[in-house]
Image (cartoon, rainbow, N blue to C red; front, side):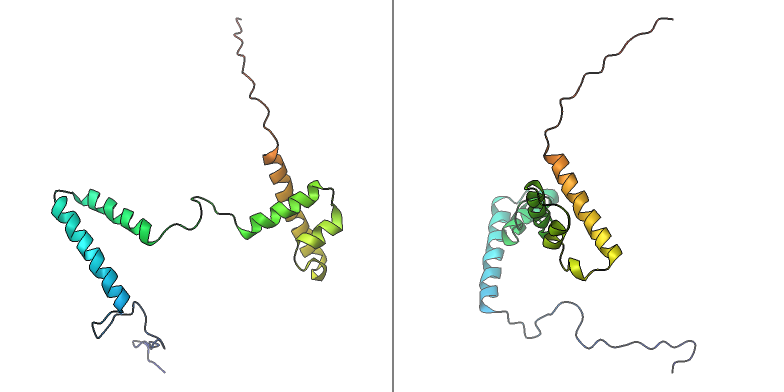
Length: 151
């Protein structure tokens, strides 16, 4: 046991941080890709050597976009939950209500306790109502008429 001024540090079982090649050898595909990247960088510098740091960062970000393409569309992706709500909303619009709706769209609904069922039922119905409200056409905006009161 350590005394007041000493601290016992636990040594991690696995190495922490990046794995660095100690032999200096890279996989053959990696070496070829690195050589192509270096050649492209040298060619860009030789042709456009007067680029400032900001322009160079923009080039790097464009290069990165091709190496790490964004998955799907930008912004919020379609989550599994969103697809589940869409299915529940379609069943609700088709006329399914109450326990059959909850049993179909809430996993393990019958194994839940009373209050947990209540929470899940309310959450599902709130999501359905919100989706329904957003899908309805919005009423046209009314003009505000200002009246001047002299008095």
